[in-house]
Length: 433
Image 1 (cartoon, rainbow, N blue to C red):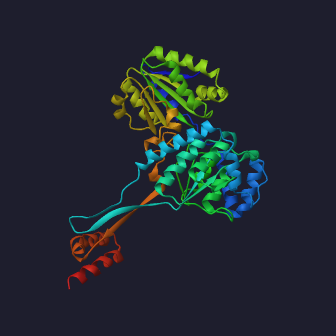
Image 2 (cartoon, rainbow, N blue to C red):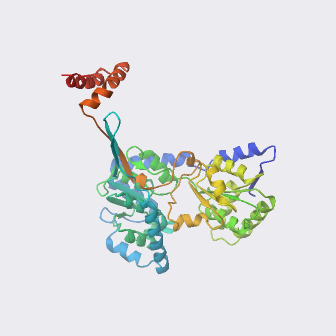
Image 3 (cartoon, rainbow, N blue to C red):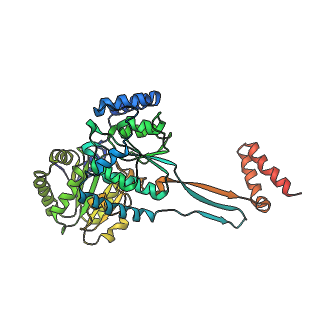
């Protein structure tokens, strides 16, 4: 039975605190195994990569077959359903258009003291894209990770995609062809992350690794951070639906289960200002679960981590949203724009009754790689900015040095850094001649 909490009850604060504290993240055993695999691949390269791939994916790769050939990618892509490929094309166009608006601009100016200042943006040289493989493959994730990288100007995109028992997902291959990606490695798990981070004889290392994966992938990304950049540590999926009494309980139930069906550790939460709606959604979820192909997963997620919270008004609901800081929040209310300014912590916000989170997963255009586990308090979803870095620039002539140099020398002396001070005073003395 799903957790039910009423904000007017005396025990609400304790119940809500327990909801926030409930752990859904990686177990220590996963971290230990991931660390062993990463260390092994770092030490032994291709040999370890092949060994772990053979054991975990039940295939027999060699150094010559670790990389998918153009023929294999093309043959698999041709098996993708035509309607799904057309949908991918629509999604790709919309995702690219959205992310092109995120391209940052350089700046170069001279301030009042005559000092030239500014910054310039440059793209990363190479990025590794992790794509889950086999039956759990998601071509939409390849679009969401690769397109902003391409828009940013990244030169090399290397895809790591496990092929358990040799299975290739046709639609993922079709997405790769659509995006012009031809470097795809049939490796996954922590071993793929290690190979992308440290390199092997076959796989050149990258500068950053992005893309979703299982608990071992997340643990490996934590381990290699610093050697390479990473997007974020993705935890189980989350959704909060803030709904008023006019919301359709069937729509609310479907949106909640759209995240619950991802994983048993996913979390779906309804915040409602009406008891009748809360009851109706609870009943609608029960009916829906009887029909879902992934009902066992969704049902366990709902029972273990789901919640229905009743509040006195929608403004109070917004405060709970911020405390949850969820990956996704839907404002399924009559006037969502009145509540939007009140939401500060959320990976993505969906406005109105006809804006389900599922649109954002596929074709809206915004990115579906978002912070989880309350990380929306300090992190943002994937964007073009994740594939560029900023270098500051500074130029100074003799006159500007005379204006600001003495202050720099004084601060250096105060900090006991004599060479710092000398590098300034030498120039100051030179300009006095």
